[in-house]
Image 1: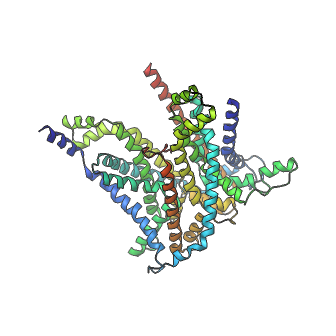
Image 2: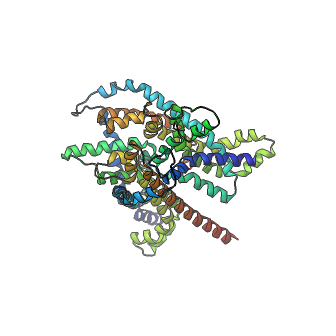
Image 3: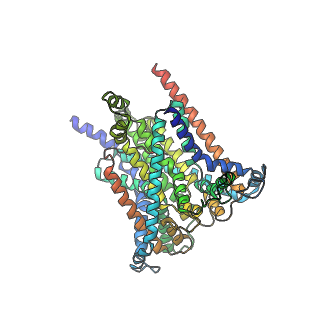
Length: 269
Length: 284
């Protein structure tokens, strides 16, 4: 049984990583093909560094991800605190339902519904081309918000409400009591939400595809337009680099988690 | 006197203003866009009311059927693959658990376009599998541009979304219940059927929704691995918005897709555990 479970797990890992392995191998291909391996070469990595449109797309992707995750985190944390303190059940339930809509709706519907809004408003004000960085930023903030709210809310439920009352009794202003008492206890949730928002925004293709204009290209959109034609190995080289950075990031998070778990165990003893 | 002071504290803490920006945001960018879809679906290019877009829908009945069929198949395959894996994982050592859940998450963080594209290299006529098959004497098989390839692409892309929620609910299993089942003479199969399955149902339900919804609305996988011969509902919508520029027809198809998904979710929720507010385990 033990051996069977190990073989089974290994087979699924092979399935999950086969295309990634293919991608890494062919990124070192000396030939201009993604199906026949001609020999080892690093030339596609070199070409990547000289491709200004790819660098530009990478820059755009990062700007968008940072901006949208910061806005979503601030707005989301504020609203999570507001929702948590809300007394009227009906209002609270309707806001939570609205929050769940972008998570439940398929990306393509979220994308086209926002696009239709932008196009409609654009037509109203007589603007020719409204789609671009601004519309994309709005779209990204919109799909990031639920993830921030849903990672902050559980942390708020765990905090002791009397603490902030105590702070107020001892003379803190509402703002002070928020930053000195409430925020430290929900900080981990805020951080998780921000990381989640950042990575979602970094990787999003479908919603971006419908809400962007011709002037603003992110990496996923560039990759899409490249795969419409034949893909050259430089896209594989780029993806290999992304793969490595994701892997390193996750390993670091993992090590940090393992350490904090060990510390907790040590504290228990 | 005491009551009023308690009330005062509560009132001081309660500040409805901080929620307003988000409320406004969600009305403008979540609720209104949905109405925009309905508005476009029921109007023509000039903005006049029409039912023409809705009446054109029966032409796409077959596309809807194929999309549903492929998504259901892909979801079932994901469930069959993921459930045992989640079970095995939940019984491993802590370090192995961490390692495996990381390995499952890494592909999710990578661009799905490129990962789907690499399957072409594996499945193509001169691809890796066919080269291997030819070496052992089996002629080249037609793997790419088939319905099977589309379903494979769906399973490959969305499998992690099935594994992780089920795994989370497996972790929450109370092991004393399993021991109790053993002590009371349940066979491993009975234990699985009567104890493990019902308790992990919330994870299964959220896994199914997280796989089914993206499957039924996908448009890239079918274009690349299906060779553009098989149109799925996502392809039709994408075409209306990005090449045919018939927003009104595209909106009416999206409206139907949305209703379809809402119905499926309602059916799923009917089976789901209602008091589990966070679902079976929302993951990244």
